[in-house]
Length: 537
Image (tube, rainbow, N blue to C red; front, top):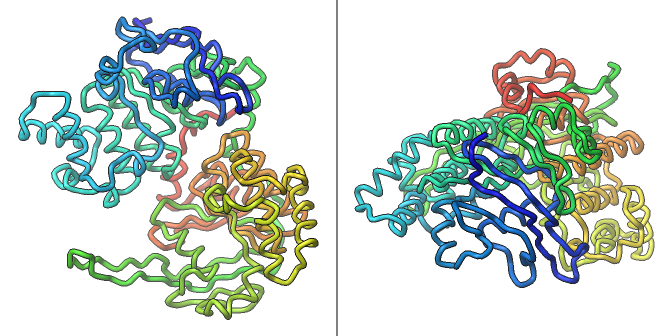
């Protein structure tokens, strides 16, 4: 065992008096060795991020503050270090990779300059030497055409490229420790696999220690040397990755492992599918070429190409593909937010393609959406009861009746009926997603479009929401089009799968058939990219 690069001893962090518990972190003790990847697991609210911010002295004091313990790093207790010393530690000896690079990168500054600034502040290199270092870093993280990338703004890069820029930034000063806070949560499965492989490669190459914060067991199985499991601010289990995943000791860890969706699809008895609620026939959508503000001509994009599909009544269909595959454009066409250039959209046998907003009004209640981020899709100034009741009220339901139905729907999604008086911020992420489901059900739809509804949720909450959606589909005989890039999710709740790439359906069939014997190379690539694929509990 090598010498620890960082040691946390009996760390305790207090929360404000109005919080749901007094301590965010309680008596936490861990050590990270050099050249090691230590994964910290736990649900939202477990204290993972608070512990990480404590290391760098980034807690929002005095509301959240360290009340005890030590954090030893290179001979210093970081909790007692001066601000001058911490400025040298942050970004220099300890770097951080954030979950959302678009929020962490300056949108008004070219990405090359953002890394050049680090060298300008912390080193005596000349401008030419700094540029050479930035290009070398970009090449190190496998960014294509580094000389071009350094002159790009964040919005001109893909999500995976932006995350690679963040990794390059973290490696700039060759730190002893990198803290990676959910760096792959928002990425497609293939991009996620690339980023995880890159982190492992760079960690081995540079001998850096990595503290990786995640709630994804697939990620843990893919890259971790050791695992620490946290709950309510306390350490509940730690050990080598293989032993924790294969033979967890704590009941909480066992519950988390059991909640991970399996890549083995559920068994479905083949039956003759009933009439489709939704049918697309040769749907086509092209975004025309247009000039940019600088006069350059932007190339047109054929986002959806002759797509045909059916969603039978009472069935669930997964639409799987990476960002840019055309999934979102397809959904926007179905709900009338985009006008297709060709083809038909048959809803209950009626062609709604190309209808105006006024003409779409009688059909809107038949199709409802459950969004990826319920917090941004719920009005923070309205009580949840009013949010759920709004749609029925606009269709003529009296307010008192609509609110009574809202209470019934809250009970249906396993929330307290009296909670209709509360606001969205008073609920957890999983509870807000349940509210989003209740709002969709309030319109008594025939079809629900679920757009990545569990991608941001903890593994146990994810399973609860997936099971809830599946139970509601069966009990209410709903049809569901499930848009996802997580193949474990598709295996858990969907009868059939369509694989979409570059606007085209490249493979379709039952979930069991496609997972057992994928015929298209792209489908095989997606399945091979699932983190922790070799680990099945």
